[in-house]
Image (cartoon, rainbow, N blue to C red; front, side):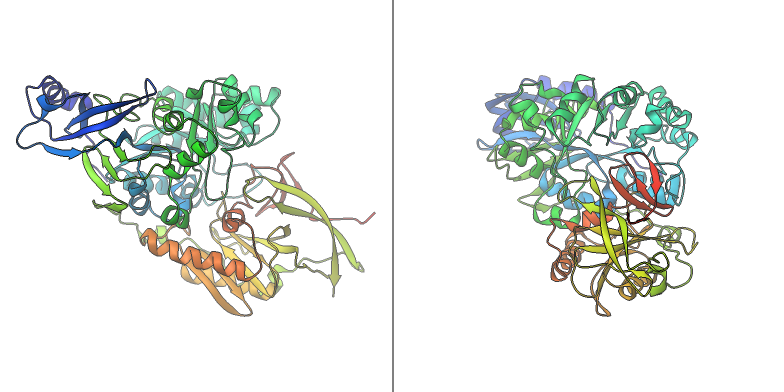
Length: 600
C-alpha cells in the first residue's frame, strides 16, 4: 500500500526560508508563550512560533513579520510551548489496539512520535504482519516510526513461533519508508556468542545507516555485557536499578528508562542523573508498554514525564529525555524533538511544566487535539481475513489436557514454580512442595496452574507448570492469546475444567483475554487481529480491559496490573523462570528444566 509521505525539508525549504525572512506569511503562528528550548535547556518567555508546510519556520520574540491576513494565530497567553513527546520504545500491540486506534488514544496526551517494534505480530504473522503494522502507521497524522523486529523466536531452541524472522527479512524491511532501525535484540546470549544470524541482522541494519535496538535482561555486567555492547545494540530498556543505567551509558549506550502499565523502572534508575550527576543526554524515557486502560485513564508519555519530575528530575531535563534525546538517538534530530526551525511542527501547549496538562497538541502543523479531545481522523488499514484467523488449537481442550501427573505412588512432589514479581518484568525461580491427589499434582490458593497452549499450528500441544503470586481463589481460570513473545495461549487457573473453558472460548472468538469462574465467563476482551489487537476504539477496549481487571480482583488477585504479568510469563529472554511450548525454561542458564524434582 502506497502512502503520500510527509513533505521532506528540501520540498519546502524555499517557503520556510521565505516565511522566516518575512517575505511570505506563515500558515500558523503561536504567539506569546514560554519557549521550551530543549537544545539549550532554557525556558524563554515572550516567544512566538511561525509554522508553514507542516514545519517550523521561525521562533523568536516577535513573529509579526511572518503573520499575514490569512495566518491562523493561536494565543499561547504565557503558556509553555514545548515539543511533542516521543515514546522511544514500545509495542503498539500491547495496548490491545491497532496503530490507528493507538494513535487516537495517545494524541490527546501529547505524544506525536512513537518508535514501535511490532515483534508481537511478527511472531504470529511474520514479515507480512510487520508490513501491515508499518502501512497503518504511515497513514496516521502523527509520526509512528517502525523498527523491524529482530528476534522471532526470541530464544531459538527454547520456543516455537508462528513465523521466524530471517536476516533476509531484515534486509528487505530496511528499504521500507517507515523503518528506522532494528527492534530490540532480545537474543543477548546469541549476540554475546557472535551468533551469525544475529550479527547478520545487525549488519543489515548498520549498512542501512539505521539504529540497532537493544535488550539486555541479564544482571551480569561483566564480559558478556561488554560482548553484547560490542555486537552493536545502541540502547537498552531492561535496566531496573541505578547501576544498570550507569553501566549502559558508560559503555556508549542510551539508557531507556520505562514507566509502563506494570513496569516501574524510572524511579530506581533516575538517581544516576539526580544524585550521581551523570549527563542526562544519554538517558531516554519510554513506556514499554501501556495497555488501553492506562492510556484512557492515566496518559502516555505525559504520564512518564510527570513521574520523572515527581522523582526529583528537573522538568526541563525530563522533557529533554522525552523529546530531543530520543530524536538524536534515532538520527532524527533535524526532523523531530524540538521547537526549532526546519523541524516538523509537533508542538504542545501546557500551562504547567511539572503537572504537564496537555491543553493543545499540534502535529505536522495542524491542531490534532484540544483539551483532551482529538480533532483529526486516524485512518484504518484494511486487515485481511488471514490476519483475523490465527487461533488454531486443533481439538477442543478438556480438563485432562491440563493435568500434571505425579510420579507413581507419590503423596507430594517438589516443583519448580514461576514466581511473579509485582511491577517488574523479571520473575523468580521458586521451589515448592505440592500435594498429590489421585495421581495428579494439585494447586492451592498461593500457587496456581499455568499452561502454555500451542495456537499457531494446531499441534494440540499443552505445557503445564505452576505459578505463584496471583493468589486466585475459587474455581477459576484466565486465558490470553497475548503471550509474549511467541504468542501462543497462556492459561492460569485453579481448576482444570475452567482452564479448558477459557481456552476454548478464545478459539471461538479468534483471540483475546477471558476469565471464567464456576462455569461462567466474567470478562472477555476480544482481540481478533492476530489474537493481539482490537480495531475497536480505545475507550471501548479500555472498558472491557477494566472489567477484566475487576474480575481478576473478584477472584482474589491484588497485583498491580496483573494482566501484564500474566501476558509476559512466556517471555523466555527475561529471567528467571518462564514457560514455553517446549517446556519450563530457566532463563539464567537458557536451558529447559523439569517441572518436578525428586523429594530429598
